[in-house]
Amino acid sequence: MMTHALLSAAPVASPAAVLTVGIDVGGTKTSCVVTDANDQLLMHEVEPTQAEQLPEQLAALVQRAVDRIAADARGTIAAVGVAVPGRVETHSGRIALAVNLGGRDLDLGPQLERELGLPCFVEHDARAAAIWVNAQHSTAADLAYLAIGTGVSTGIVLNGRVLRGANGLAGEIGHINAEPGGAPCACGLNGCLEVVAAGPHIARLAREAVASGRPTALPSDPSAADVFRAAAQGDALASELARTVADRLARAIRALVLTLGVNHIVIGGGVAAAGEALLSPVLAAIDAERAASPLVDAAFREARVELLSPQAEAGARGAAQIARQRVTARQREVVSER
Ligand SMILES: [Zn+2]
Image 1 (cartoon, rainbow, N blue to C red):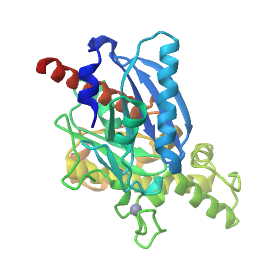
Image 2: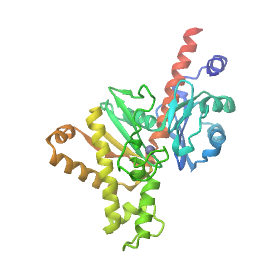
Image 3: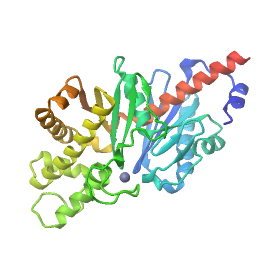
Image 4: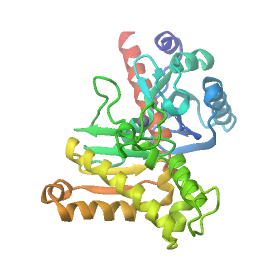
């Protein structure tokens, strides 16, 4: 990457003045934020993801943010962080296997650096969110951030360190089996957790149920949000769907708690906008498992399961935080080399 040469030629900004752009690329929506050194939000923009023209779209988004911050005389952007799904190589900025973005390999970080002339850091979306959520809690060092949006995945922090795994795919819980013989998944398998619990699949299951002619207040082409809203209002079909989703999510959360020993689970992503209508049946399903099993009960005794609104923009803010930390560390390196 070009950043050492770039930074050694540029004046070194004081740490307080470091503004960074953070972008969270979802399968459906892409969010862009600008935050300052104190993690204060200076700008926020959301637009539909254009998976086919991703580098071009992201470069245009960043450029708009850079221009707006400059026009408002609020400082200059020092670096960019991008949170993306799939297998992310943080050292090279390459991404691969993002099945909900078409799955093609991209040299995303280097491409954006060439286009923008700014240091760009790429991180896995759920890990970026987990890093930001973890930073909000001074004491929470073990955390699983379960992102439920167009896909399902987890960002895991253990002993304060983010878990990547030797294969770079740690936390891809969306592709564990939730329904043997279930519907096909974008990853190539059948019955993955994603095909039950991700937003587009909740909508698909609801559409199929409505088409079967069962009485319901749901529209003919319902969204995941419609399902949880109708369930909260007592619609029987929607409640059944919401309980199924909650049951599969509770099993996934049990798997996280039992395999990782984490005591803090945060559910985020677009589907988390459903709020209590999602959280209540998830907690009820966990309680039912705890009542049936002293072992599961012991595993959950210290555990907190909570919801984070997608409006918190944890992924984008985490990406901005990572960019800030890494560009500040590089600036220190450049200064010490002089
Ligand atoms: Zn899958």
